[in-house]
Image (cartoon, rainbow, N blue to C red; front, top):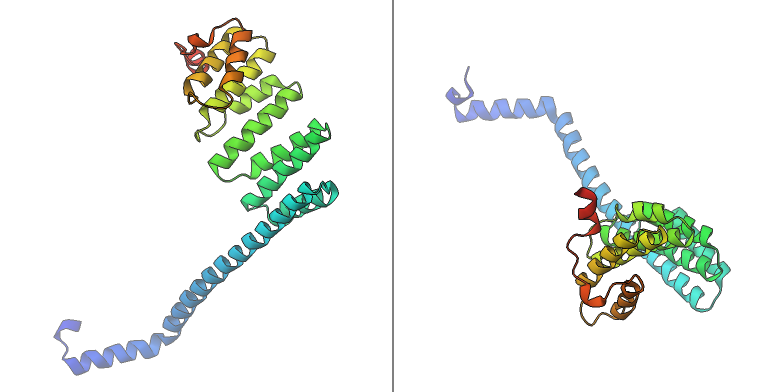
Length: 227
């Protein structure tokens, strides 16, 4: 019999019978929905609390570095990396850890810290800035080709001038002066006229035998590679 042909009383009885027979499934479905909603809210609260804990630790890390208490700073960086690896604070702590290593002339430890930060940076802008630092350390370690390979993998996050300049630095070390000129000129073309590092970049270009006025490249290094 079609549900449509039943009168109002019969339809009501059918509905009530169906509810009686299926109340457990209905209750379970509602219960699961409430559990999922409660779990989501609890997870968000837990995540916010963990982010707050990480922020407090990172602030303490900065204070310790300012006081030159490097052992305490390194201990906090290690805690952030082990217990809060999913937060940006952990990646930033690894960068500060690398700074400490570089201040003590330890390029290998700096590289290890920056590599960890690079791998755990979830935001493109953060990954790009960390990648630039990592490439600089690679050049300092005599790994210019590795630095160049890394530069090509950097996210496009508004650091084109810094990336082009760094590419030029790596190319100079590799003895590829023509490509280095192009990279430096590309960096100059992307810099604002009043940028504080513009004069230094012009000096780099001039050292390669090119005048700063020649700063508009016909092709970028990337375009040369693809041509």
